[in-house]
Length: 547
Image 1 (cartoon, rainbow, N blue to C red):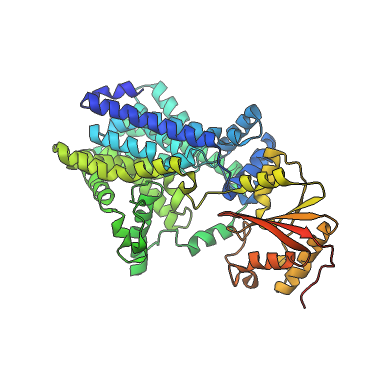
Image 2 (cartoon, rainbow, N blue to C red):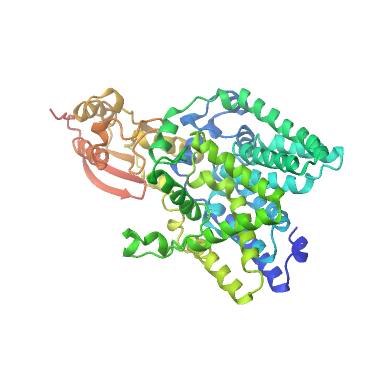
């Protein structure tokens, strides 16, 4: 497929640079796939159902930990798990394939919308920006949703003219199938359908308008079936809405204050960072706390070219403008109605639109001056290039807020476990442990800690109940205790509740160590970004409860 772009790229240098970008994108995804980093907690939540449920259960049962994922995605991941076995590579193969296919399928999409410079920049951001790479090796649906967005635009490009019955059928069925693999595809396909319908009405192209109703209605029927039989049957999670509302991830509708208006700048600024990867995060200094810190990260160029792209797209082609802008409008409306949050990974499926608009802006503003073009492209791409290089030289910095050491911690215990030892997993690390106990088949059986927070009125009562767990290890010589020091609540918990448990963030860990000291002597600890492991020598003294 890359050779098809020879006509779109102006010279041999641009063409070979394009090939290098593709190779880098493939290499970075394969590299992070094969280094096989630990699953983080959010991945473990979804992996639990994928590992424990059969096909029928995936179709009929609510997922563990109140997770939601498209049914097509779940079934195809389960199929590959059955082929490759229960391991991390099997879990991540579909996100990886989605990431690789996204690169290839985005090529004809960029060729349709963009010229030489825009193509190179849009493809480079998709190939090397950290978020696109990260989600290609994360066992969640976001990489597949990105692929479905790109596929939706690819189908539009290829079958939009609806010249024959075959084109109508392929576009109708293609869009209908995509919806079963991506929740967010309804915004893309719905936006394309709405944007084209309005365009045909304005241009009074009645023939193609009536023909296009066939795929549009087919997509709607497909979504209704999906909603009735699957989406509507999953349990509502009001706590999720409260969570995103608390952190301001829904668009204010309508904006009622200066603070509400600032949401738009803040959200788009953050989007330029994650998932676009265009902010200069490699600029680290003590100035980060100052009010001008966001300006140091150079958000100007992406904002300028994004705005220019919207202008030039509208000026050049109302049809293309509609199919790029209407999906955004639908998403913003859904966010304003608190149906879809706009933060981090939830932007990912929209990034093809932003990449195309930035590319259109580049092509429109700097289509003549070659020196200026080189400087602008360098300034735009320097951050994703540096961040991707750092992800190889120091993997701990690769989206470090999601970096987990669960696997390393469990493996360490498994290696150093002795006869007579006990392993106690505190309740907040159980989701990760249960997944890895299936994937790795450890030689020890763990005591699963119970969560006594909600049937305890205060810390003293909580510790009294915690003592009933500790009695299970009193006859062992040593005990390994695993505690998650990053995720201190359970799925579905109200934020920072119960208050007595969260009045001090350090309380849960400090309290656990205090209670452990009553049954044993501390030997050593292993402390990572998200998991702590404590080893205690059991003293066989009666467990004491504080008055």
